[in-house]
Length: 324
Image (cartoon, rainbow, N blue to C red):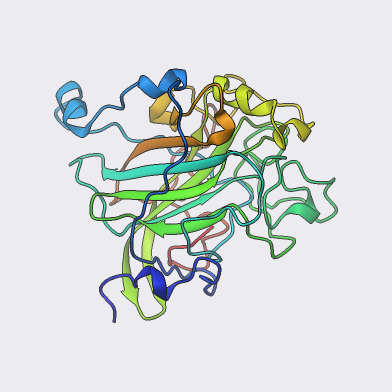
C-alpha cells in the first residue's frame, strides 16, 4: 500500500482516469501564473484574513470561520479526471484557482485532502450533460433530475442527474500539499438561467492510499465559489462569453449564494482591468470541519435544506472519495 500519492509523471493530465468512486490524487503542486498588468481589479487589494488574524478576532472556540456548506447541484460526476489543468479545449479567459484548505478549529492545513472542482463553460454548459440541457445547453430530452432541486432554473439545486455523454471538460480532482494548498488551471466560467457565475467544490478527507487510489474517508465540505459582479461584467463583453444569450442572474439575485462574502465562497480576484482577457487569478481559504460529513445534502444557501448526515444521491453507493 502506498502511503504517498504518486508523482506527476505517473498520472498524465490527459489520461488520469479511474473507476467511479475511487480517487487517485497525484503529487506535486506547481502553480501556473496568469498575466497580470499594472492595473488590478478592485478586490485584488483586499487582503484575506490570515489564520492568526482570524484567531485574534474570533471566539475562543473558533480559529477560522467555517466556509458555508451549499448544495452539490445536479451535475456532479464521480471519478473521471485526476488533474489540475481541467481546461481541455474549452475557450475562455484563463483562470488560475488557488485554494487553501484548513481545519477551522485549529487552523492547521489539511494535507493530502482530495479537492474536486467542476463548473460550466463560457456558454453555460456542464460537461457530461450537453444532451440533457446541462446548464445553458439545448432543451432537455431525457428524464428530469431525481430529487427536488432547491435552486432556480438551470440546475442550482440538490437533485442529482445522471450524465448524458462522456465529455468531462472543466472537471478535475487534485490533492492539497503540506501547506493545504491546491491549484487548478481552468477558464472563467459562464452562466446559465437561474444561477450567477460559480464553481462547485468538494473536499474529501480521512481516506487511505492504496495501489488503486484514494479510498474511503468522507466528504467534509461541499460548497460553491463565486465571482464579484465587476469581474463578470468585464468578461461578458468578450468572446466567447458575449455569445451566451442566457439571462444572467446577478450575485445578489442568486438563490444559492448565502450573501455573506468570502465566508460564503466569494473569491478574491486579481486581474488587469484593462486586459482581463490576459487572465484572472482567484484565491480563497476554505475553513472546514474535517471530522464532520457535509456531502451537499445539508446546504443550499438562503432557505436551503437543514443539516443532514445522509449521503447525497451521487455518493450513497460507496464511502470512497470521488472526483468531479
